[in-house]
Length: 527
Image (cartoon, rainbow, N blue to C red; front, side, top):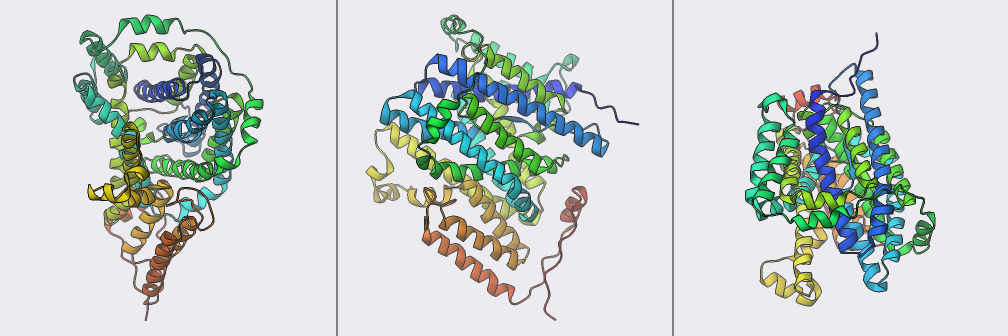
């Protein structure tokens, strides 16, 4: 008898409002970036870019709902949670500030900047498709501490820090919202009538913001005039025009495409740690196809599997919340509603959900890895922290009308800012965290051959510029590559002593049992 899997359960309502607010924040942000930074016209943003993004969100979330239901049938379970899917947060800022803004500043032509963004998103999609066939092997051999640690690094820095700053900027609006989310999502406490906690938190923050005078009624009436209806069109001409000058885009597209499939790999590992073991290749193929189709329709923002599956699972979400989010956000895109929504909802009432997700993912890196690998988790965190820190330094110097080169390394170091080292450490942070965390985890386990292999991979990746370098090039960072080679040599020498691998502790054996992992074959021990 076939298992009946409901399309919607009570927990989907909570997850829908939580995840929906998450995606809403991101679409509001990318809308503001297009209009305010690259100076794209409202017509291009509301009638081309957002409708194209809407199509990608519907297709992707429906697909991930299908994957969830297929997994539920295969494992005969009703508690499978669909993977969340939306516009990639780091890529929103990268495509605007690294790809499109320089083109706009050089040409003063927003359309040319848009073309470059479309070409860049297309290349990202192609690389992720390639990663669909490489990623499963990386996931098989990389320690969980490295995979989840890199994800925790993203969650602590790029997902948590900006929302936290915005919260404390208007703490009297944001903190009550955050408290309500914590109570509703981290405890078994329920509101009367089981009212959705995500919706209650948003309404509470909005009420406080309007009553306290933090909002502007004139902005609402002005934004209401932008409401219209637009369906996406095909923009192959813009895409091919952007691809005609593809060489300058490869320097960022290649490492960030690798970042995309590495992040997707970490997110799939995160879902597996929460109990839902998805096929990585199916996930990455969808992400790559979404970026390619979106770029053809006019969106320069590659969609991807989101961080946060464990949070929505804990909130009670199953398979309906993801599809509902994609459909609702798409409708808002088609109706050009994001200007109005940005004027109605206070940002400090929206962003606490992102901090909640950051807390949960950061905690998961320690909860679902062996205690002995805690240092490896921290090692995987460090490159992401460095990348975030250099971004903050660069933005601060730019606001002062200067940059690190003009200020000088000596002046920065004299004030305690080791800029060059942070910049090198943070470039290609996802890959760097994966490699560094894996080396530390294997050293802890006294599996020196494995540590040496990852160190050699780090040397190769650094040499060609996929990490610890500004761009992809031959001999992009020889000194760092040499450093990784020296690690490989040191590990190789210790491997010659044939040490006994560290025996697994009870918590590791339990994690292996929960996730169906067989114990690895021990390395040979000297007689």
